[in-house]
Amino acid sequence: MFHELGQVAKSFLGGEGLVMLRVSDTGSALLSNYGAIYEVELGESETYIVDTGHLVAFDESVQYRVKKVGGLKSTLLSGEGLVCEFTGPGNVMIQTRSEDSFLAWLIPHLPIGSGE
Image 1 (tube, rainbow, N blue to C red):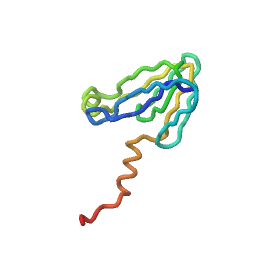
Image 2: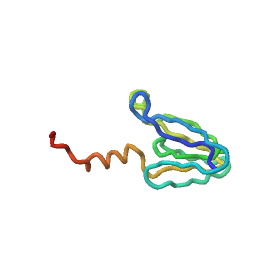
Image 3: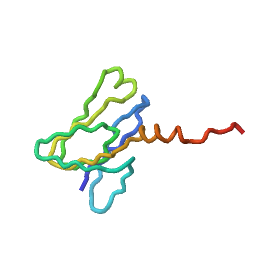
Image 4: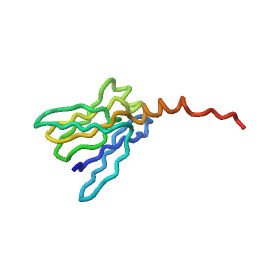
């Protein structure tokens, strides 16, 4: 059903980047995500914008464009501020949480070593 998988990867500048992996053929594909997966069904010429940190997968029939949000400096230095604009028809799968939000929640709960 989904022929392209969006996987967020850390760019060489340390922020979010966008790496696409095309999956096709018959059978099952195992996806990993943070939070729940929410499916958005787009009609003909309908658009939807998703932060790259929340993108999971989308149909091959869906057209997409990567755009920057915010200033050029923040995009170049951190890689953040990238979104994907999708145009239907087709389905887009997004995750309700991102790796960054998961780590922001997790790190304060980790035990601090005593140095021994």
